[in-house]
Length: 200
Length: 200
DNA sequence: TATTTCACGGAATTATATTTTTGTCAAATT
DNA sequence: AATTTGACAAAAATATAATTCCGTGAAATA
Image (cartoon, rainbow over all chains, first blue to last red; front, top):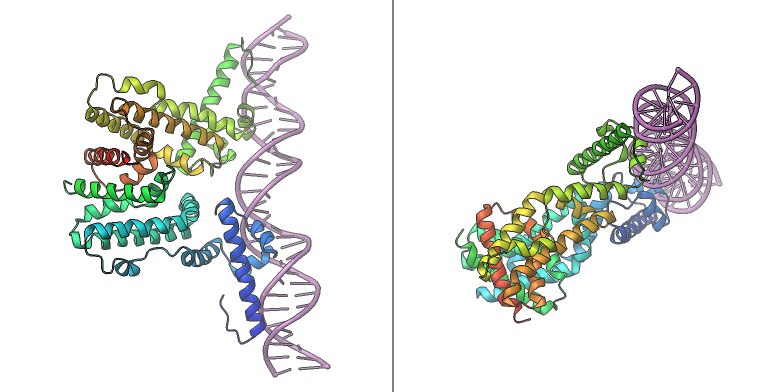
């Protein structure tokens, strides 16, 4: 229920408690995961009554979605809109792939914790699924853009996108390769996959 | 509380209800996941009172662990013990890698549903984590065995194991490649990874 | 057959989480 | 200044799940 506010102080208070709620929620989500976090957890952390949460966010979906906005801008995910710009001036396939790996790796590093936690509960909480689908679309757009000059097939794009997906990144991260080596390995695997995908 | 049973019929009844509980539990776990399944869900499905569940399995951990036994034998995971035998008579690296991919792929196909569901709740339910760690150890043992004649470094084994992990398999499965093509792709990626891992 | 044992289900109890109700006080309006 | 509005917290009301208690009847034992 958005309101018309001519009332300055009340509007500010409203906004402030809203932000306190979101801060507390994100903290707890980072600590225990999304699904296991309860309303009373949040209220306690924010120093508010539970009823206040409902006033601001009638459903859990609303709350998670609102967090999504903050999280999105904190992790700056790749988007279809930013894809073209990310490869500006790079013409060789090699350069473009290197840039692809850099960009996505940097993004996953920024978002590792939250992407992992969100992934766990995505089919429990629709807002999370929506969020992650948007992330995946962004990654795929980057892959497509990186491969654009190579006239890669749809299939090739799919395969490379799989290789650049978060679950795969996350598993490889468990090896304690340096970031440098890790990106190098990824790039090589992509080359290999592209060659292989030609035969499909 | 195990008992001394000389009493035939009671022992049988006890065993039968135990199996009914496990059957119902596994059904529900397959349908809704492990964590979201409640004791009353299980009791209803099994046609038993909830109290009966507690008598047979005092804690959730006991129940999940007992399911684990059945699940384990249904999905026949690779184990360190079976690793050596799986590559009997195969001498060339190529043959061994092909066998590795076949074996693990077949296993993941058998276990896909449950491995996915278990993975989601593994850090919520210790018994699941234990189970999955055992699975991972088996896969790694197979990788090690497949690469044994190639004198691969520890690092190489790790990298290939990552490539053969369930999360990676699962993501690639989303591409709708035929099993044939999919295994072919995996094999090629492994070759590439081995070459790359040499430089690390 | 008489007595004891014990697996069971119904129902009570406890625990935890969600959602609504209500009174209060400060801010806004007149 | 008097009145109204609305943001808030405390606590009540619901809802759902975990856990325990207790009487019953069939199986075991003597």
